[in-house]
Length: 312
Image 1: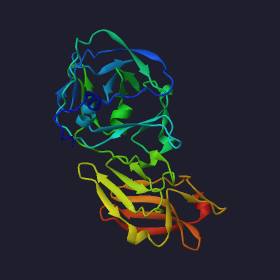
Image 2: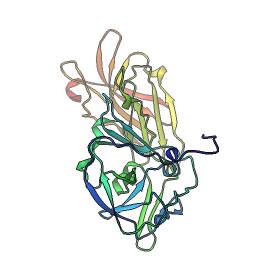
Image 3: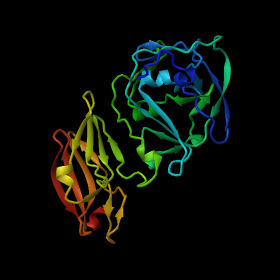
Image 4: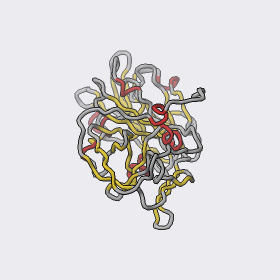
């Protein structure tokens, strides 16, 4: 919590530094319809950082105030491990009220924004999920030095798990108050020794999500579950998995190599989480195990050996 009585404008709006090549300039407009976030109608006409519209899609500004109100996290990475990548994802809401940044004059007409370059990690730490922003029909934009995200159905509903409705009468109505997606740990984006060892990956289901360690190396035994409408629960499976090293969502091939090949995909069916893993004992012996975990109790209920020829 910020305890100072005066907070600088730079902290409040979190301007994004210009990084990389400046790319395509695009035309944007101010919404002609209401935009309502968590019950509050946005005053885009008089906000310095208004909602904008590009190619018929409404865009949200990632200011400090909006991120706290909507429950969002934004961070830019450019290091040896994660290059020119913008993470946008879920965070805990820390403000129940949104206060606009007063514009010196009313917003109206057309404006120019920039389509950003680089990669986008949309609530994921799995590099396979990252996408090239420039190739998107609705890319991330920069307007008045603030990054904006497109409120498409794919991003707002499927990725961020928000409630979303649009009508000619009510305009765009979004509710972010009930979190249904995981808060991603950004440690693996930093690289360094281990290069992301101990990262947690996630399976998003229709009624729940499960987080699991990529490997138990690094003393990483935590499994996470949220049944939507309830609180996230963490189970420490150390006592059940400390007999060996486990590599989750991996396959032991017929040559004895561990591969991140997801031939048997993880599933969550009711409260049972099923995932293929490779178990490697202290002697170096390896085998494929199909683990089934009851995510209401955190107990492994079965551990079946899968021959390499079946898993590969």
